[in-house]
Image (cartoon, rainbow, N blue to C red; front, side, top):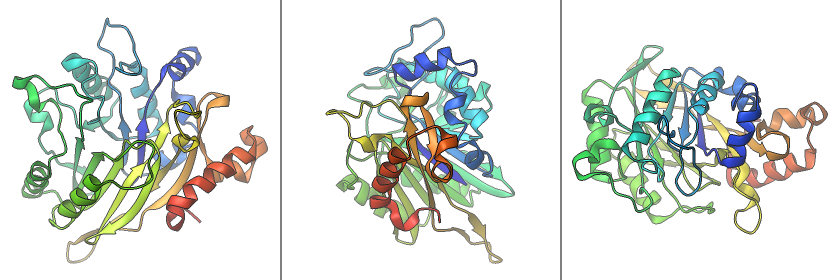
Length: 325
């Protein structure tokens, strides 16, 4: 399995994609082999799609082109988590547009809903193993879903997540993966919500893997109550300005891989996660660089190896024990 963090198409990214013959796809090309080789690949699409006939927009209220979903599909992603603090930026029409665009591209999602049933736990099959994928966010940036449509997305509420995970188990899920949009922006350190919620979920016995995003920098990986928690996967694609507003590490991320096993007794387990560091090369078209591959031949990559080394060093300080060898 393969997982990545925030896909956050800011205005310069959108403008470049509109100039590219293949849209956003060239940005993902370098990591496509890692993604496409997985039996299950899950991304996090942080921003809603702009409703048909409405203008595109980026920060603070995002509404991005539907063509981002084509690139996600062509990169090899099977699913996206979509619950984020930007979920409701373009209202219920934005939620509908996002789900429709992903499904039209052949990508499933968890975290947004066009109907009450879509936010409920669902089961899907990966190589004969029944899996459920759930998605939650810490907030909607001060916005509120309509009182009669609060089912449109899902906030982080420990009791609710535990109920959903247990429901998934009762439906036949052998593995439950939970995507969490949480943490403090720009901080590699875990906050109290992350620590407390991860502890409660992992000790329940109903959650098998937690994958996190939102901090816009990578955060630690820890085994909590015997369950792997990847707290923060960084920005796999963004244009956050690395000046006084955002640290250089806001362009660092990784493809996180792990293997799921079922033993002869039917017990499910995940291997130790493996980190494949990435860096957004803004100077050459916002290409998501597979750092280790690029460093093996930096001239072919067309980039100054120093930038790659600096990014690798930052990621190593947080995730060094897990980086691919």
